Length: 149
Image 1 (tube, rainbow, N blue to C red):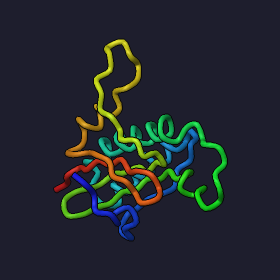
Image 2 (tube, one colour):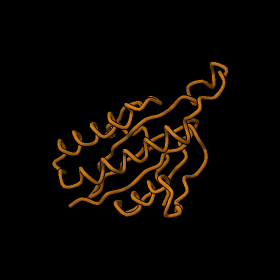
Image 3 (cartoon, rainbow, N blue to C red):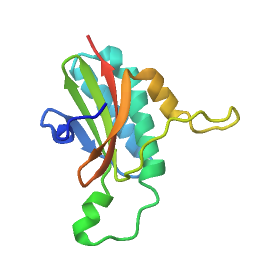
């Protein structure tokens, strides 16, 4: 499933920029919780918070770190983009995190003794559908859709 090209910049999306720091996941979960509560979708809050937290952790850990060497000013904005978007449309909520990487996220089965590598398995279990889409000039958005009544 591919997202429409202009969905990331939709004026009806709620979002915020994120940093590479450990507080980003907390801020993203808080915005998700408050937004879904405002939209009257309290039943989706727990799953959406978990999904957003995993996406942010992956972006900060894999796609956004370590910071690249300084880029020319005309490229700097695209290298430093991290952000969260929440979009409600006909019977669904899209939770998405932007990161500057072009690499696709990979759902894998970790060995039982590994302590990491289960985040996308949780996203897969909690969401109705998930995937990723390029965001022109800014990297990719990893997104999950939760259906709502």
